[in-house]
Image 1 (spheres, rainbow, N blue to C red):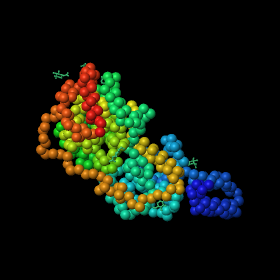
Image 2 (image 1 turned 135 degrees about the vertical axis):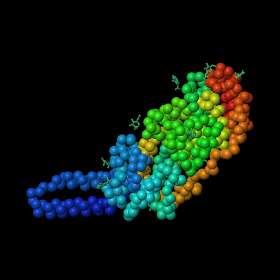
Image 3 (image 1 turned 180 degrees about the vertical axis):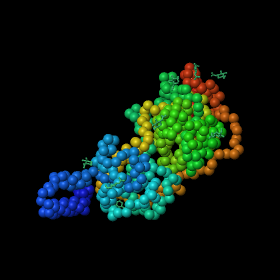
Image 4 (image 1 turned 90 degrees about the vertical axis):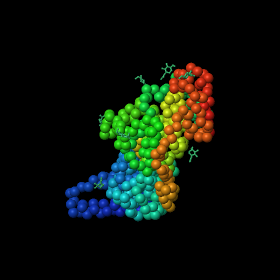
Length: 459
Ligand SMILES: *[C@@H]1O[C@H](CO)[C@@H](O)[C@H](O)[C@H]1NC(C)=O
Ligand SMILES: *[C@@H]1O[C@H](CO)[C@@H](O)[C@H](O)[C@H]1NC(C)=O
Ligand SMILES: *[C@@H]1O[C@H](CO)[C@@H](O)[C@H](O)[C@H]1NC(C)=O
Ligand SMILES: *[C@@H]1O[C@H](CO)[C@@H](O)[C@H](O)[C@H]1NC(C)=O
Ligand SMILES: *[C@@H]1O[C@H](CO)[C@@H](O)[C@H](O)[C@H]1NC(C)=O
Ligand SMILES: *[C@@H]1O[C@H](CO)[C@@H](O)[C@H](O)[C@H]1NC(C)=O
Ligand SMILES: *[C@@H]1O[C@H](CO)[C@@H](O)[C@H](O)[C@H]1NC(C)=O
Ligand SMILES: *[C@@H]1O[C@H](CO)[C@@H](O)[C@H](O)[C@H]1NC(C)=O
Ligand SMILES: *[C@@H]1O[C@H](CO)[C@@H](O)[C@H](O)[C@H]1NC(C)=O
């Protein structure tokens, strides 16, 4: 069929045929010299058959840095495609450039992050081959690339950016069968969090905000935000940037599940602050926390409303200042009912996070695309517009203020969705609503609060 011929180019036919011919000649020569030596011709045929058969599998080469976790997490060869249950599993991954000639691979993945180590592959590009631009880092941390040198070169991109040809995401959130499809249903589910039977996510929590980081001087200046924020609300800093550490496993605390177990039992808010504020760049700092019982407070360049359920996180950039954010967090800290609303979605959505799902989706999708889009020609005339920090990332000045207004904070801060709403003082709405039971006991108070919630949430 046409499909088959495009995979098995004329060149390969010739190669295989020549190989075969060579063997025949060798056989005869050896046979003439040493008549007693018998060759297992069947074995040779089998090897040749294998070479031909391999063309049904798409071959993928990881050109450089195959040990980086975003590619290594998948595995090598053909088996991982089967093990991971890929929809299309007829692919083979190689990390050894000398197994096949470069001209033979269907896809060659170039990890831009560490390209400087060995440079671009140089070979005679074949029509069917895809050169894949891969990165999991934001443009601010990508090394300087001479973009003009990579013009008209790459066919596909594979990254965290949502417009990539193959998505390599730090996490994803899938709606379940009972997830709401409109805002009214969403609000109804949020209200259900007020019921006494609903889980109280604030139960037993004694601490307010936690941040965990070891990279303390970043392009995003998140560290200045944390310092400013901590003037108005208690922020415990774990890791290299602070004085706290998870004492369970000193060496692996960063990714250690028990550390998160400990944090989610004690803290109400987790600062999911990215090290750079770039388009679509939302990392495991966000997705791992969504799996937990803490509210992620995000600081990043992703369009969070497009990737996470409504009212499941708090965005720093929706607040004018760290002080205003602190006021809002304190309000939630004191009002369990409002705190719990941020967890309304938990039972209706599934969160996937981590490098394993990242690599699995990435390679399964790549394999499928290689098979499905055999005849599709695509390449990028340039990639600078998509990957230059000046267009893809935002920069802020330090968030720290030397002189801070020490206003008394009896007002509920204006909230993300309605910054124009008049500020409402706590005493006019919910004098003593620190406790769900109190609210449920007083229908009048309950109604008043609901009114406030709706006013806050409706656009
Ligand atoms: C793909 O490769 C694997 C391992 O080399 C082999 O077992 C399998 O039969 C191949 N599949 C096809 C369709 O060629
Ligand atoms: C790559 O493959 C060649 C030939 O099969 C082998 O000699 C070499 O050791 C391999 N390199 C690595 C790093 O596995
Ligand atoms: C809070 O602590 C109590 C007593 O230790 C325990 O029974 C309960 O399950 C805890 N609640 C949550 C939500 O962890
Ligand atoms: C860590 O502790 C020292 C000494 O108590 C204090 O000066 C410093 O501000 C603390 N750092 C943070 C990030 O809390
Ligand atoms: C720390 O983590 C390592 C690797 O995950 C594990 O082997 C070790 O047992 C852990 N130590 C403790 C005290 O949990
Ligand atoms: C963010 O995503 C939402 C929901 O998909 C969309 O309506 C909105 O236009 C997006 N905002 C930006 C700035 O792209
Ligand atoms: C891949 O990109 C090159 C240009 O860099 C182009 O010539 C070739 O046609 C593209 N191949 C496919 C299959 O899209
Ligand atoms: C709220 O608490 C104050 C004292 O802290 C009390 O005087 C007032 O009656 C309470 N209001 C309600 C509605 O329970
Ligand atoms: C909430 O209020 C009820 C009744 O007023 C009381 O029994 C309970 O201890 C309170 N819970 C908290 C956490 O204050």
